[in-house]
Image (tube, rainbow, N blue to C red):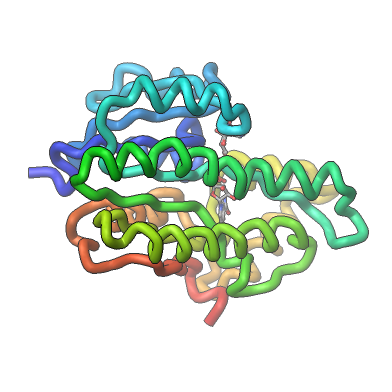
Length: 246
Ligand code: NAD
């Protein structure tokens, strides 16, 4: 028996990294997974996986999100995973960068919740919403993560508000706060540095366990929060950072 048997699990940013690991683990645990991503090419890698349906979706486009929501007849779990890491301090963050980060990291989750929360309510069966934050947020500062931390702190606040407002509808809302996870975008950020090997060592050095997380270590927390095992858990931020913030 799977831990997510019978559940419909919708997520964004499923083509790679943490989202992909979550899609695969959720399907393995028996969920019917609707895996969405803006990148249709990479998303194709999930096609044909038992339990997974793929759908190209740009979470920045409200009309597309609304259309997508209409195509989903039942939902038990919503995982808002899409996000972007802007590198730099206040001095590197122009208004365009600020807006892009807030639009992708925060507003997209708001858009998804605003179309799916009414569905959860109408179904009357409750559900679990999991929002992707980061330990770099209201929990911890890190160099050159100015707007990123601001967005991820906003995700924690938004999740707590949703949790309070919809607890009577049995909708649980939690956020997930990873440390540094070995994903394609992290590799891309390292490759963009003058010395990628040094960049890797610097990322590892800030992790107290002396290694990066793998995406599955985050996925297992998301699956727990999606499952009925976490039925008494809501409004919390879950740190999974190898001890970075301790
Ligand atoms: P990633 O950055 O490697 O991949 C992100 C995915 O998001 C890609 O498949 C991309 O196509 C998709 N995406 C980008 N814009 C989109 C849009 N407009 N609509 C739909 N999909 C879109 O993945 P990752 O590193 O696993 O990061 C996933 C989430 O986890 C992000 O929110 C990130 O901030 C968060 N996070 C990552 C780390 C880390 O170290 N990797 C740590 C903490 C939090």
